[in-house]
Length: 340
Image 1 (cartoon, rainbow, N blue to C red):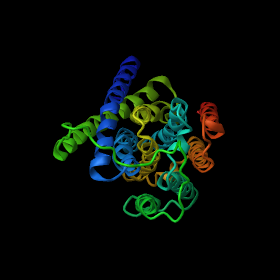
Image 2 (image 1 turned 180 degrees about the horizontal axis):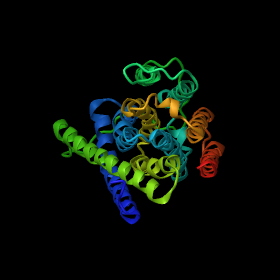
Image 3 (image 1 turned 135 degrees about the vertical axis):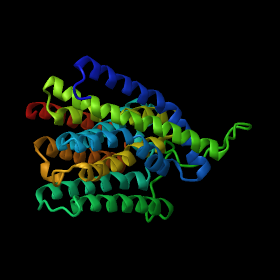
């Protein structure tokens, strides 16, 4: 597929983006109902159900790139997706007029998530700078990332159920509580999970298409694989998060919106573990270059800005943190263009 004509690669990538966008609304509505029916709550449902599933196109794209010997593409696709998805929080904040989004959706799990993500990204930096040892073809950092993700999810559930300090409730704060279903609209759990699996499969299938067309685009245009991964495929594979976060804000499922992004970001770091397994030329982290390092740093800064916004809890407007998120992301893209 890397021999596709340029127009065909662009058309296929555009079609894949349309599929991802069209599936976002129904998927968000379904997960919002599952969050209420299962008792997971919007935050954890955003982490586990939306965050993981909407990340599947990016996962497949990164693994596909690594398997074809393109480590920079694999890593920047994951890291570029994290950066783009974090920007979506600021974008959703601009669309939510009732209050500042971080203020309204403040919770301990949402506050913990970007901190955990920064720890995972720091682990990636250490792996790239340290000795490039492998065990059965995997760098030990790949296993550490899996452990950190599991621990973060476990800790998020614990602090949500047994908080040691509480978020101050204001008239703009929206609690993460189940909403009663309308009379006569109750659907069986089996039917809901079947629809969930179908939509997840549709979203995941596009990942392979995006990955192949992205690599073809890099070959045809002469753009660096790092730029294509971070700016083109990373953004396209993140479109489900954009649709779901905006739709969740529209239906006032605010904790679902934040949980989708911060949970998806944590899952996106695991793309590197999977890509390390698929990369057959040594340690994936040993292939880190300036493009990868730039977007690791951008990911850390953007998520710490989200943390600052959740702590500050400005009552109205997008706030300084949201504006700074846009500014740092655009600066990162500009820097990437000069490197590539």
